[in-house]
Image (cartoon, rainbow, N blue to C red; front, side, top):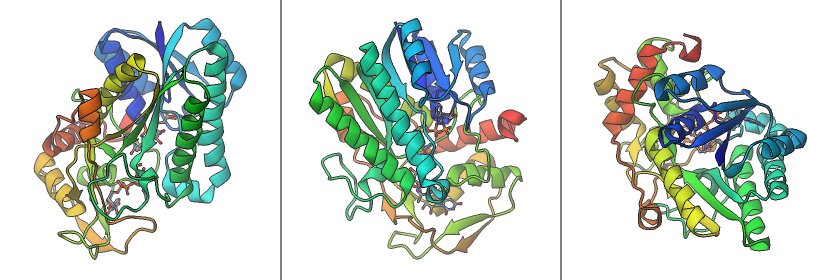
Length: 338
Ligand code: NAD
Ligand code: UD1
């Protein structure tokens, strides 16, 4: 049996594929390469000494999906494929809903037709919207995400919940990621933003290496200890371990499982700058800018449900996240184009 990883050439997907190969799974990757490079998967093969099957294509291509399920004996689908740039989702909502929502519908229809009913979906803490008290646990109702990207995640969650209600043979994990950062310890694969990074850690890292001059800190007047935004940053390798545990859990028990994947620890933007400076030995110049539209003051997880039900807990600390990001950045100053 094989595991299908949609979006497996991307940042998180490539780390997932690496781990699956290390655990002796057969892996089929479907990726359109719209936001990734095949080089990531070449490196995954070279790190693990194992090969995978790669299919270049789009999750919205139903014929391709039907062929894929007919030709490969798939037991589980790990669904990472999606567009994730918040700003672009505001400019191109139709494109984002089509890709993220219609794409998932096509995937589920093809799975249903092929009798494959185990799915792990990459959701996001953004589905909680703005929550008054921290930490955030899964019992809280979902809120109002502030942008089309976030709403696309919430819509998919609703679709998948209805699917499980309609047919109890489905087993689905909704994994709500907090802020994934870091890179594989080899320094050979990592996050490789196409454009100017939107997210904090890739931006800090590009400032430290000299690709960008200065970091803008979006607001220092939040009601947080130092006034800057607080988030729950989680090492991508811990996140991947969470998927392995979720796969086992949904194989044991059909239905829907919702789990936060975070560390439970919040760090401010200034904490992150300092930790990165210590790990890299470089200065990260910054200035204080206005708040970014749609940002919330703070967000961190209560990860105890995942620990209780999946036996999973994040192990890597902030120092490891920063050292691993820096190793990837230094080895690959221009990402996979280096
Ligand atoms: P990424 O952009 O690096 O990876 C996504 C991959 O999906 C890319 O390789 C891209 O080429 C592919 N893809 C996109 N649309 C496709 C389509 N229609 N058909 C086939 N392939 C397609 O992003 P990532 O950071 O690895 O994120 C993976 C998933 O996790 C996404 O669904 C994202 O929304 C979700 N997520 C990410 C974060 C984060 O901070 N990185 C946080 C929460 C949730
Ligand atoms: C953002 C998205 C969220 C998405 C997540 C993962 C927004 C509003 N939210 O979350 O939907 O799921 O990425 O892709 O875009 N910061 C700076 N300067 C920067 C970049 C960020 O000060 O150049 C600050 C932000 O204000 C925030 C923190 O750093 O306080 C983290 O930002 P970021 O990495 O973009 O993640 P989120 O905002 O949590």
